[in-house]
Length: 82
Image 1 (cartoon, rainbow, N blue to C red):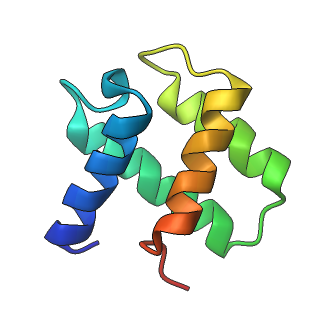
Image 2: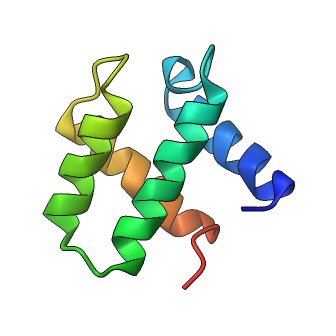
C-alpha cells in the first residue's frame, strides 16, 4: 500500500472512531489491509465484518455495527486493489 493510501486509510478510520487510529496507526492500517485481503479472497460479508470486529476490537471495543461501517468505508474507498 502506497504512503498516500496509508494516510487516506488512517484518515477514514479516524473519521469512524479516533480510538481506532490514535496511538496505533500502523496497526490500524494493517487491520485495514487485512480487510482488503478478506474482500479480495471473496470471503462472505459476515465473515469479513466478524474478522474486522475481531481485528479492530483488540484494543478498543468494536461492535458489529462499527465493524460493518469499517468494512463499508474501506470497500467504498477504492484503496483495495483487486
